[in-house]
Image (tube, rainbow, N blue to C red; front, top):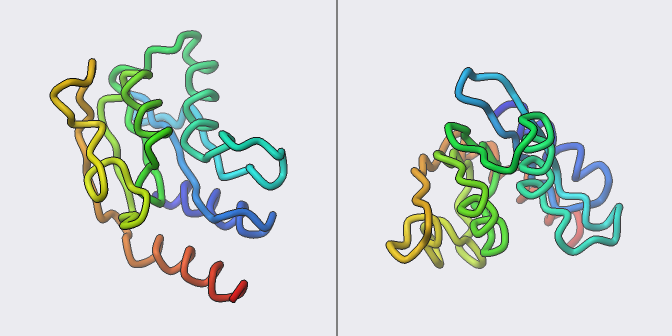
Length: 143
């Protein structure tokens, strides 16, 4: 989560919503990392999770990320939850819940839906206060 928090802080420094993510392989090695880059790239799907998944797939040489864990500072949205399922990620570790748009247990629970092709284990609340604090500080500066 420390690496993901570092990515989130970099996103904030670039004036984007501070969300950071890393994909960890079965051996514990970081395969990919990402931070929100929507503002920087004018790309609506440049979410931290998507960028980390893309980098991990490239490192692995294939789109299937079975055995991997995605660590992210904020609960994934619908798009990112769908990407987790599509990439066959086994585990999601998240920091702060997103009570407005979360799709892995708060508003929706796409990753554990029995109709999905793949089920993702969710471990929530890892360094939650710190993750939420980074987001809170970012938005307080803009209000």
